[in-house]
Image (cartoon, rainbow, N blue to C red; front, side, top):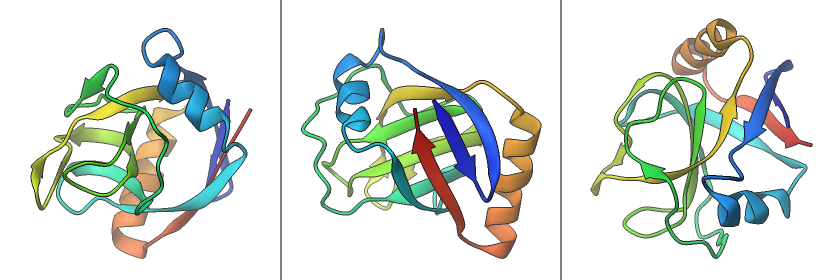
Length: 133
């Protein structure tokens, strides 16, 4: 999979062995384009708020502590549906408390550049993002 953030391309692997239903559901909406903003509560990450969007999946390989490059889908519940992209230390949370999201993809290239974009998102605002096969 290719992920483009603010014009910069990253390689990523779908975690089909760990989160097959989530990967299948996400592939159905690809190519997927939106904007990332910096997380409010969680630390060093970016997120895509998706409101009431329903991927119709339960929890699989869910974590509240993703490693840099890991991408989580929170499938609605205590908080709105959202995607989180960790670029550093993250404790996934919302105003409702700790959240666990499905680890469905991992960025495999240029994590230093991902960190630069994450910090830039904190200080300069939203960036475009696109997921495609």
